Length: 112
Length: 115
Image (tube, rainbow over all chains, first blue to last red; front, side, top):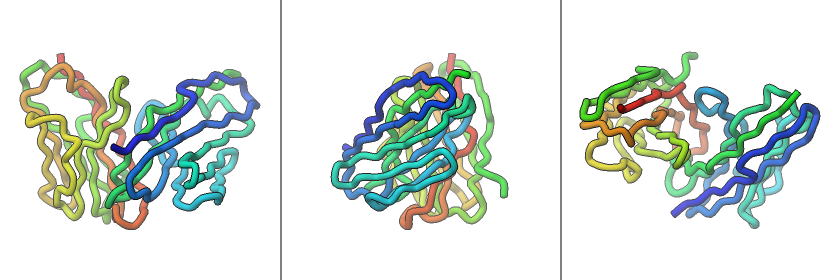
């Protein structure tokens, strides 16, 4: 059975801090790893990673995948209160990129 | 482009009643997914369709749950009879082609409460 484990489960920081969220996985026939941000509604897509060692970057957020060690990290620099959300890691395996197994999420709270 | 559209956004129903959740995927997307999110279990895939055909329904909890996709622009998830433990947020998601690495996009969810 595919498995995704995120850590920490929750994190409280102050604005301006840098955070690193972790995601480790076990999956049959790995296809991709995705990061989503969930506020009050639907998860919104952040990154999709398929290759090891290639950093994806979007503004203050960046992510990298290590397919040998089976993990990924999501970094957020200079955090803002608007970054407060649940960050979900998901892995696609098997025959479909859409059949995602989600981790339990990391609840990030950024205080002013 | 409109995103994935789900209805109803919120539903409160009594145990034993039938519940039907509806989804309109993004136009041009040929894969559709139903996920359920609870505090205890997080996000779980229930079923997914490719070109309107159910591909994997191994996540459907039991016979009370059924899903259909009669055409490329509409899908339903039905629970009959509903039970309090079915209370959750049900997300529909779609992607252009689930075999080639396209990202999936989520609707805003149907928040179901069974009392």
